[in-house]
Image 1: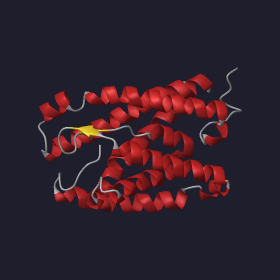
Image 2: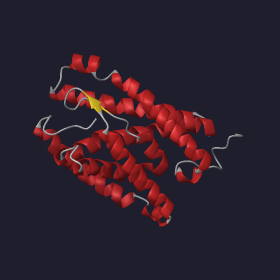
Image 3: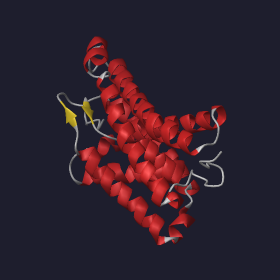
Image 4: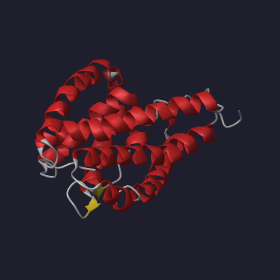
Length: 221
């Protein structure tokens, strides 16, 4: 899911920078930086960024732009919510630029397609779960941590597929038969890893998960 440069038409990259800049400024403005007064939270945020740089560097693919890797999008959005998560993912992409795995010209487009789309889907799924299901510990873990993580990854994959198809980079039948189906397998892996990490956090460090309120998500409810 690391979109290289130049793969798409030049207009896509310029459009992405025009959309990315105000979103980044808004995220920087609304991010609750005060949470970092607790050094533990800052260390956790930076640690997750470093781990994701490593995960996003380990990708599999056979053609330019058609690579796959774990994202950690849902987990990051649950632990830090949208503004800090968006800034964090941009640091991840910056890390990829610095280690030569990503061209700086495509940073904004990758940020919008992966972090922007993924975090928006993650937020909508969280709101949907809260609206339709009872506030229960296992609902939080399984529907948000496991199934939510899988759905977010598949949604991001669908976004990349549509972009490649609309720009004519690859034929639609090739994308639908040889690329998009692999996101089902990636979603399964993402679900297990994100779900297990979230479960460990909730058991041993529930205060690390910003979207988890122990007074609401009670096992006994």
